[in-house]
Image 1 (cartoon, rainbow, N blue to C red):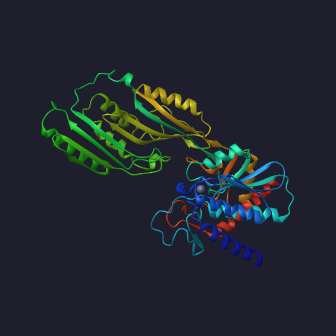
Image 2 (image 1 turned 180 degrees about the vertical axis):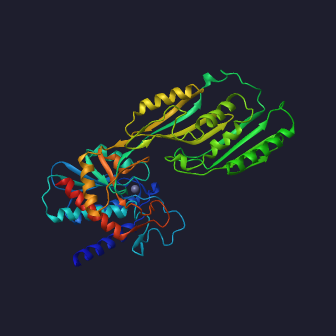
Image 3 (image 1 turned 90 degrees about the vertical axis):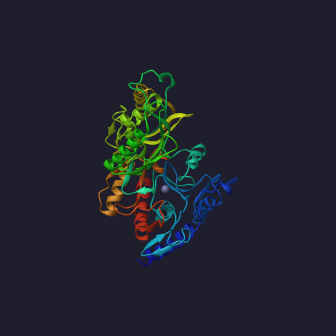
Length: 475
Ligand SMILES: [Zn+2]
């Protein structure tokens, strides 16, 4: 008991030192051996120095990553990262002066991922110090670029073999074993299809510009369109009529926005929706699609109309890709989702639509892209650029999953339900890696927020889980 308390005090003291290093990526201080800047390099060195003092084999891989290891044979990996996201504003106490209040340690990186990293390192050392016989080699891998471009693990893979099995304490308990893949197409109007269909009625309105969203993986919370009444279309009363129709539309939809008269017969329409993460588009209200919904009810012609129709008749509330012909789901990761993240129309540059599609882990991405291509082609659009990233799936009966389930249940008495995510966890960079903790079920997740914290008792509980997990995987 005394010894456990002393251990805990040592852990907290080290954690305070470690969290005091400002390890936000800073390219202005980058250089040889420190590709992500001074602070990140110091945090990596801090961990490697601990490993060295404790008598482990350690290696710094050009500042991109590092490892600490012991044992012989097949590898079991624990994967952590020491970089953190920028602190932002509004902290109660300075983000790089760790402060303990109510059993919680407040600092940037407390829960993502320096707190869990140190807890996992202590667990790793406990296993070695226990002297229990192991049949495998345990490698503690330290990444430095998880929050930006994952270049750390890319370089790692060039220098070292990627481990077969292991876990990453960089998400939530119990176990995340499956992650969706992503397809990010940029759609443009297909010139060859332009003018192919004749317009049903002469255009009354012209679309000057349309803009919604800045990032593919966010639901746009603001949209703006500039339109003008065509010269021969009619008189001023049509402009006034549209303004009042728009106000009615906003009220019916329960959103805010406004219409502003411009010089002559022009109008600028604005609309406020609700932002959400792109992996859960139905949690937000897409301002761009909603504004297009209104505009598509007006007589526009040509490319203006084709742009508004794609948004209004196909993408609007098509959260699961049914109208795009790509709806699918699997047991592990659920339904495919579609987010229309950036919607742009400019008279000189034309129309573009950035989608962020998250497809089930066990679905074939090429087939999905093929179906998407057909669907957009039939509407006069084409896929102009495409970026994809694969999903990640470790089968339920994989020995790594079964072992961690057993450990979690023994340690906590709670069911070790398997989880999946629409996002990507660091565990994806291992072959059969899973995300394992450290946020316990029902606990507040404060990663990336102001006043980020970790409960010290939770880190200690996670440490015990990690120690048993490492032992069971490597015995
Ligand atoms: Zn993280």
